[in-house]
Image (tube, rainbow, N blue to C red; front, side, top):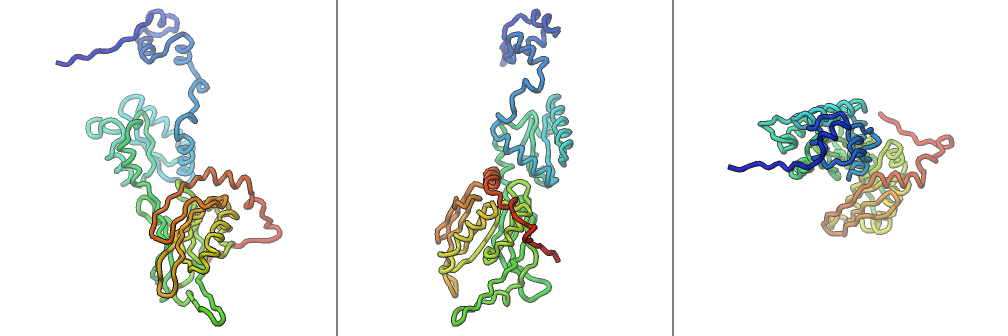
Length: 357
């Protein structure tokens, strides 16, 4: 039969108990936690908040705080998953009350000892997802739940859907629409292209997109609460700067611009326009582009991601390709604090109007 051996660390437990008016048993617990010396014991027993380590030392703490602020601001539900022992239950309660004091929508889940086992597991992640919750905080557990964290991550995808023709119930012409889908598969936002590409060049090409699609009448932004505030547009829209200024004034941080440029305009205008929209509004620009030979022209392709300073941080070729880029919203704020184009406007001299139907 296996035997258990408990390593007992030595100290004068009776003496410690007398000096600090605690039992020798508690003195032994303190020593087993590698707390030695009267000063360290005094701090452990009677310390204040100032004696605690700064939580900013924890890796990822700043990102976690910003995420929680966005969740609270957007009234998006949060779940606290604790442990079934005394400190797990108490810490879950304290965290719940603290978040509620900040205005959060939050509930708690204490795992069933026999059914769920200790701490976070895949079943609890799936259950939270089914309940419409995509933010989980763990108390007294979770530090080594690598598989469970990966399980949670797989659901955390926001999807921007390029553009597609959408049936219009009030007009034979369809809308040219783009959509944003949240991590639960719900439609978070939909935009109908406002500016049809109507061009009549004397003795040259004629294109009247308004004969084929019905223009929309609303500028659309959506605050995801976690991946930034998105501004939606399609292709030819990008030539109308006032539309993007309105988006930025309404909080947009990332401007989405799916497009299908021709070779002549693409090589001279595509990157210039995208970098300009990024610079003048202090926004990221994400511009996926079509490629290939079409019936009447060859698409320029060259998908781009541009940062708020106007740097191209990701670029595709004129072939099918997947590109990635890091969106840093802290950097976005740094850029805006250097340029102040949104704050230094003169609406007393000119105005930018937005009229809703």
